[in-house]
Picture 1: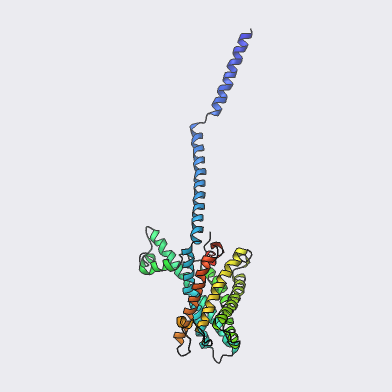
Picture 2: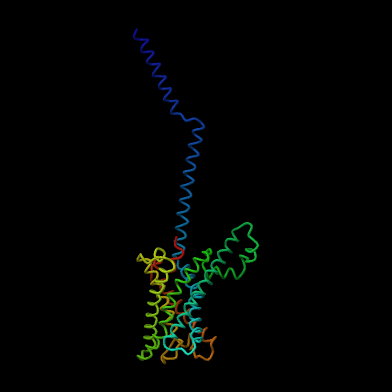
Length: 324
């Protein structure tokens, strides 16, 4: 009597085992679903890894020396050159200038030159970016075909300016106004400081150093004020040490521009830089404006190039706009 019971127990346990076995085996449909989920997870992981790789590549590229040198050249050819050019032009346009009216007129000229130059820089970078996009597109638009990607002009733009999409009229306007405030402060301070150094009978080296330091300091605080007013405190980048050091590195470049600009002045007989940048005689307005623009351009480039090899890349102003 006990054997059938054991036999039934064995059968029932076999049935339970078969049921457990059946529940553990996946149906073909469930397998496909699991495969699709795994593929989706793998695709998401692969995309995220690609994004991280792209971000790392962009970051390393933005922190490279060639990238920094291109940023310096693009900025110097637009904002810095035209700041000196229009500083001189507005000072000529001042009617019956007194001590302060001349300073204000030249300061407005400096600000206007930087404002105009910043728009030029944005336009050149946008054009270079559009040419790259049209080159990668299989069917470029008619306007893109007019700007042939292989033309000499566009290739030169890619060398001098960093290709960057157009940020929009509003963002471009706010950015231009912010940096113009700093240029206005530096431009107003330049001539009074030169006159002060001349009255104290300082030699050229001391005068250029002092004028450059004061103008660069005025630019730093003016630019900080402009960013807070037109870009907002969050975008100003002044809440971190890295952001402050970046603005300081830009202000040091402005110091070089203001210092080299002293080389065009006639008040210092031991001016060794005069043979390089020329002397503003006041006899030719266009020539004096070109000398002013060239001297500021040269000073900014020389000092900024030195900073590239002295400061770590994350603390240079050249990485601020494009860091991912």
